[in-house]
Image (tube, rainbow, N blue to C red):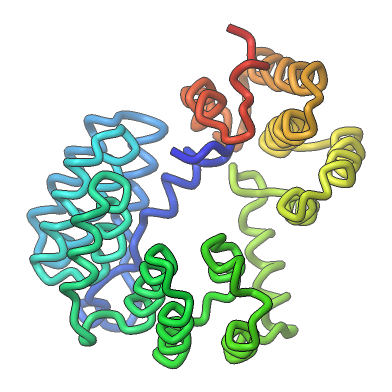
Length: 316
């Protein structure tokens, strides 16, 4: 579990693999049953969610995705060996979308097996993804020339995640080289336009009143934090917290404030922000969006696993 306040909520959404076999439902796409599974898992009954997944395993259309999502639940509940077995089962049954899940799982539990899996894949597998992952292997082996060659191949095969590439620390030593800069220039980011802005507006409107509705200011604050501009991020959060906020936004703002203060070495400030966050959850009962009900059971785990080191500042 990554240490972010919103992680349990995202875990309920991110694992939902794009519906497979759309040709089986001509015309209008059917409702995705996995949304119901994870909603049930986080808000109602974990055993019931598992029973729902078990039922989907018996449906040949959904079996591969059901195996992947069963693996995600095993990962959430910290059973990585079971997760890897489920991902492998899905992959062996022909569910190619299980491949990155299997590889990432093996990287955590059995790096040697992950390497063997990667080496065993042919060029018939997802080309861009495979070449990108092999470029990372080259970097770990101390072969920057081989890494750049494979990264260039990945872009030629359709890899276009500039953000992922810019966030990967293994590439840091190569960022000033002409070869790396040339590869970055070859990646074509999505063109911004009026349609994109319109879709964003529609999406925000649809999310109002739900746990996913977040003020756009949080994106700016997150970017400041990622760039290490912590004082500016804290100032922006202070201004945000002075304004009226929905419960989920105030919760996120207080938690981000605690993280930033911890990273700045402000122990008393981190404790104060976490205490305010604790009081917010204690003093709020009727919260219409459902955010509190989803997040509350996981608060202690989130704080304990936060990579900013928040645990010493939390109340015992």
